[in-house]
Length: 320
Image (cartoon, rainbow, N blue to C red; front, top):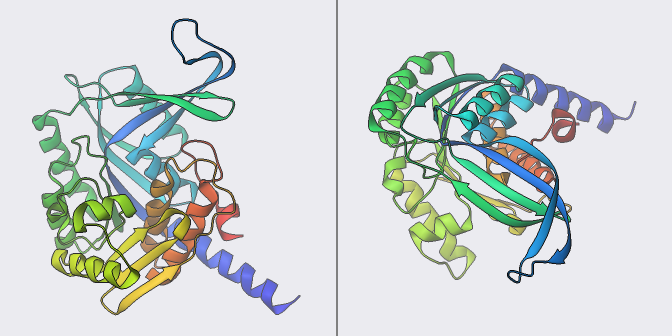
């Protein structure tokens, strides 16, 4: 057997085993992604919009639930802590989590509706997205914080998936508790207030999210200066900037490492950030070094953008 083939199989086995050892706690805003697929044959006589004849529908886990689904698909043991409404979408999320082998710690808020994103797809193109969302009540969020502390001991790494829907109101307290327990903390950030992420191990903003906080950059040295200043200010071990077709750049105290984009064909970027941070969590939780974990997360992101909607990457696609 050629040496390269043998070493490749050994590496794949090592990565698979690492992911299967990982115990990942995902916390954040969950949502139900609904897809209506159909065909377009005419324009409406009522307004200049296409008429879509719906032929089938699909329901998938979205938001933090998609992060959990991606980590579980790689073999990690995953617990999801979040809030849903006392409604049909909340029940659907619970059933989908069970079907994906994810341990669900879902707090029910009877006064809040579960977030739903409805996408209408015609001829493989997204024509419309309709969002239904409300902010959970303070009492439910406080209860979630108490359970978060109880769940820390049974997990290796914490992923905080912030979609700005209110589910991570107590994120600063969560980061403090996770640090006290000696856990790695990965944050997918949202909004302009990054001070709330102070003390995390790593944050994974995309270009627009980072620019919203540090301002627009005009060169790679300017980007490095701004990103490193933010990383140091927040006390982060690393900042991973996802840059779409430009790949990823990892900023650490020792410097920056850039990785070219791994995508062969970009079909849909929905949920790509979820796949990236889930892959990081599964591999870091299994003991893989940061540099190798980031390289595999870059590869995973390149695979998932070739799929329609929120999707997962399988161990065969990623490791083999």
